[in-house]
Image 1: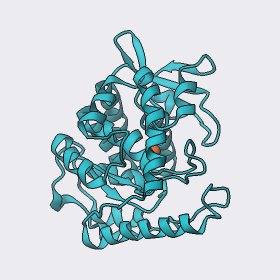
Image 2: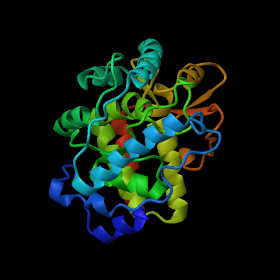
Image 3: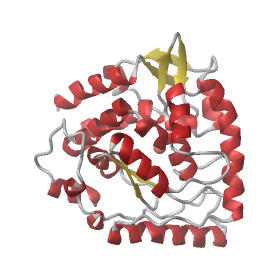
Amino acid sequence: MLTETVSKVEPAFEISNYAVKDEDLPTFRDMKFENINELHLDHPGAKDEDYRTRRDYIAGLAKNFRETGIITDVDYSPREQRVWRYVAEELEELQQKYASPFYLRAKKDLGITTERIPQLTEMNRRLKELTGFRLAPIEGLVETRGFLSWLSYRVMLCTQYIRHHSHPAYTPEPDIVHEAIGHIPMFTNPNFADFSQFIGHGARIASDQQLEELGRLYWFTVEFGIVEHEGDIKAYGAGLLSSFGELEHAFSDQVDRRKFNLEEVINQDYSYSDMQKILYVIPSYAELKEQTRKYIESF
Ligand SMILES: [Fe+2]
């Protein structure tokens, strides 16, 4: 498992090391994963042979990355590009109303448009310049400790395949829409980048109980976070920004939007499969970073 690999390359890693050098990185070659490319039976693409073959091919590129350290651009098909354009355009309209202004600017800065699927290589180059964050291709969902631990090196594991064309509005797992439209722009924010790295540090030393708490913190911030902005509130979480349903729902009166309280968040249960009933509003990314630093230092 990845967890063992990561703990091998520890131990002394300063929480204040915000500029991780290439030589500080563990070798991607050592990452070992189990069953990460499995499609569950209820996945919209599970019975589509062509889709499965395509996913296997893209998974092969991620494996290749671990051997060579080089990210391969995907030559996306016209059908894949159509899925992107449809989802990206729908989201863009909603985001103009609900997304954090920082996020909207960052998306532009990274060259993420509605026109075509962005490549990890181009976003990676720009991210590295801005906050020293890196993207690393991965075949699919990874277990929590392994996934979060890579954040301590300012590395985000990213899928490159796109959801099945039969259900463009829905995906049961991360895909390039979720990564590029949901997650990647926020890593250009220095405070958010440092906060993500703290979560990574925490994951490497956490007890199982603390890891569960970190998973909840990640969920209610990185995935479903809302931030105050000039007397209003805006979405910055990837699960909101990459889903039309969740984004509109988050600002409806069906959701209990609470002031962010770290102690409460790390004990708050959530559901993967239903729309969120409770969301937390942070005052600022700087405040989120500072509260998380104190929390991780208490481990
Ligand atoms: Fe995510």
